[in-house]
Length: 73
Image (cartoon, rainbow, N blue to C red; front, top):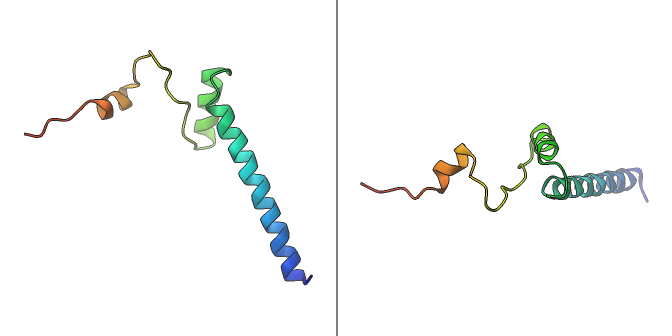
C-alpha cells in the first residue's frame, strides 16, 4: 500500500469515527430519558438540531407561527 493510500485509509477511518460520534451524540440529544436543558444546551453548542418538542406541550414561540396555517388574501 502506498503512502497516499495509507493516508487516505487513515482519513476515511477518522471520518467514520467522527460520523459515529455525531450519530451517537444526536441520539443522546433526542433521547427524552435525559435532562432536556442539558440536551438543548449541547445541541446549541454543537450547532445541531435541538431535542424534539414533547407531545402535549405548547410549541415554542418561533415554532408556533410556522405551525399555524397561513391564509392567502
